[in-house]
Image (cartoon, rainbow, N blue to C red; front, top):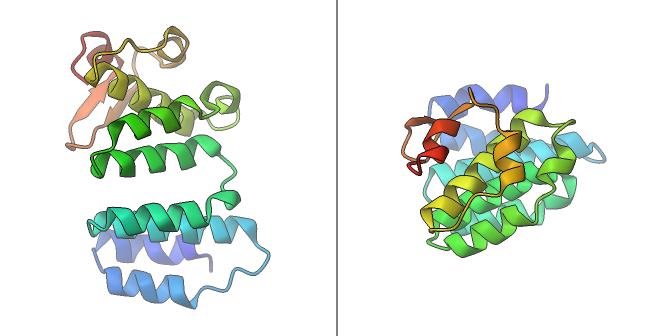
Length: 159
């Protein structure tokens, strides 16, 4: 059974000790997807525990296994924001291949595009027209404050 299949329930129950047992017992070997899953979940758990610097380190250690560079960039950007480093978050997302990966990873790239636009607007900068055009009018996501937001929030500047 994959790490992803084992860990989700423990994570939802906030049983981080069980999550670490699953991660530490994993032996992914040459399975890139499994290594990616381990990196993703280790970083996600550390973030949930408020250990943002460690989460960033864990993410950076395993970044080569991410198939979707936009997901890696999004995760990294969210950690930078939590660390009070929003300019770095913006830079990371601006270098992400969001448009190029959109056809292959539409949901992940939309999240990255939205987050970049929101960060830019929050910092007083305009959102890139190409990313705004990529985001459907009915797009909805949850922001860091656990509030549902969408493209209309970007357009009125309250993402």
